[in-house]
Image 1 (cartoon, helix red, strand yellow):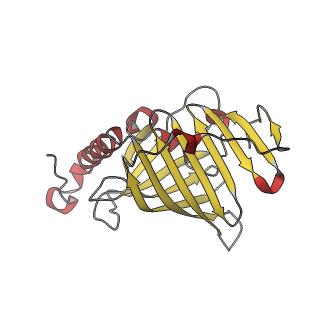
Image 2: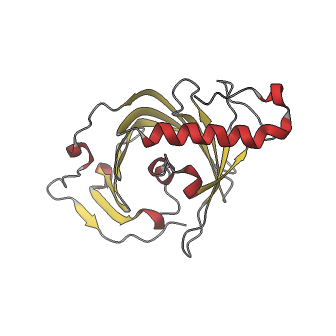
Amino acid sequence: VLLLTPFSVFGIENVEQQVQDLVNHVDSQYAKTKDFQADFTQETRIEGFDTPLQSSGRVYIKRPGYLRWDYAKPSVEQIYVQDNQLQMYVPKHNQILKGNLTMMVAMKAPLHLLQGMGKLTEHFDVHPTDNGRLGKGGLPLLTLIPKKHGPSESAVTQIVSEIQPDTYFIRSIALHEVSGNISIFQFTNVKANTGIDDTVFTLEPPEGVVIVENILPQG
């Protein structure tokens, strides 16, 4: 079993190796996780505004390729992802928006990160955060820089992730956008390998809902 030792024991020169060890732990944990669900809270700090936006809900993941992100407060929105196809149901507007996940460069939920869990280095360049800054649980914070895939540019410049030390699941993430906005997500009530039914990830369009196909990337 690979044990992570505090940076103070080895010195700052070993930070990179400590980060790599942690990435291996996280990838290993998520790789053997068949399904995952958790409550989340979100605080979005918008550049130029003093008061952050608050929201909350629940996220569901099932391998291979299923993800559902539900906002419950302040308003209901449901985002369904199967592989690279995304549907967002907004009851308030009686609309379902359909599009391609990789083209949704300004999505307000960390969908691409969560889908890529178990293969972090495939999707991100991973670095120590602020010369080895630690999270509340004592593990190093991970700074993830999205790798470029295709011609589209990501709206996210970096993601700072805190890992839960006893499970190696994500405890929190902070999405830093090109615009200067920062969205901070905290995950609680985590449950893994409970056998989530496939129907949880299937959106049945309500009668009379307007379906908008092939939505354009948001700037």
